[in-house]
View 1: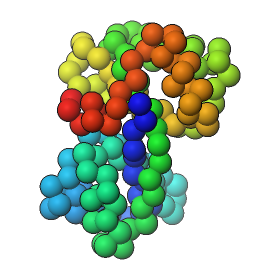
View 2 (view 1 turned 120 degrees about the horizontal axis):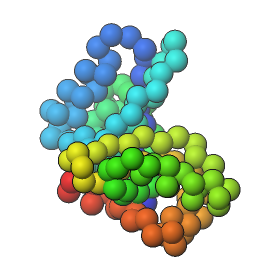
View 3 (view 1 turned 60 degrees about the horizontal axis):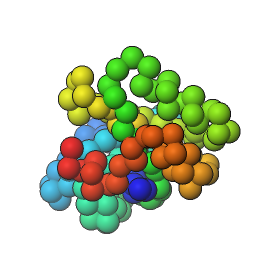
Length: 143
């Protein structure tokens, strides 16, 4: 039920994102979801890829600082209020969302919300008990 995500720290300068995606492409690594957060000096690129260890190795060999974290992928209907329904459950349970991002595979079907929680086990249990489908890394890569 947990998904491995890699986080790449990069300088906030032209071409760095292109360099990372080129390295992944050259190593036959498919990006399934991503998020970029930046400050004036650096950025954090969060990625869900189909070959986590291979991606970490390739990026480290090219001088990037790479970490691995665990996130949860929640599937919700792609409709008005889909995100709100998940966040209401999260709020009621007193869970803290450290960050999140989302993607839609095909409009009008399901959306996938990627969450990083401070209490991951409680989040999984709470969301499953509320009827939400939690995806594995393999399921995300198959989308």
